[in-house]
Amino acid sequence: MTYPEGYAAAVVGAASGIGRAVAERLARAGVRVACLDRHDPAEVAAGIGGGAVAEALDITDAGACEATIDRLWTRFGKLDALVNCAGVVGKTNIISEEVDRADFEAVVRINLTGALYLSQPALRRMREAGYGRILHVASIAGKEGNAGMAAYSASKAGLIGLVKVMGKEYAESGVTINALAPAVIRTPMVAALPDAQVKYMTDRIPMKRCGELDEAAAMIGWVVSPECSFTTGFTFDMTGGRAVY
Image 1 (cartoon, helix red, strand yellow):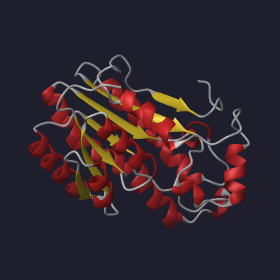
Image 2 (cartoon, helix red, strand yellow; image 1 turned 180 degrees about the horizontal axis):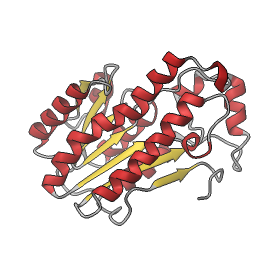
Image 3 (spheres, one colour; image 1 turned 60 degrees about the horizontal axis):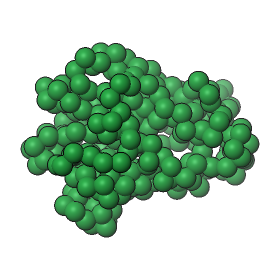
């Protein structure tokens, strides 16, 4: 994948997992990368090199999202792409009648509300510039629902709906907004889940394996490139055949 000279991207959730893999892949392709995470992403940015920058960011803080996008725009002179990999699973393997309400609200605040807070300042800037690529990492759980994962499934379903709305609203602006719906990807977040929950999810994948970080990064890298120019409001499948719609 090639990008125009000076292409600039912000990757949220860059400290680990899919976010880190995306940040590293974009940097290798010559993209100027800002690594953002609520955990310090400085080590990732240092490893990437090439002028990559790092900032701590809590996407549940709307003011912090506004300020961060403004700073990056000033630093890079623009922001061509925003990749949002921030997300939490919350408590799992719990039936809906026993869901912890505080945990549910915390998961929704990060996975859905935070995505809105992050998108708003980027959309304003990108619309004015006449170009932009926004990609939110959702989940197959948002399409189908995973038993025992009410908070996660509901928040990712909401994120998919938000992407559909934004895609339609900005379709004529030169800005595309899409989502990725992975099944089980081999990440630290998945490694922390109960074995029973991982088995339940993996058994439903026709390829009978987890997705790899490099596979996710490759698809995201294309979606946020200029080459992906006629698709918006769409949720790209990455499920090893589990979802074919």
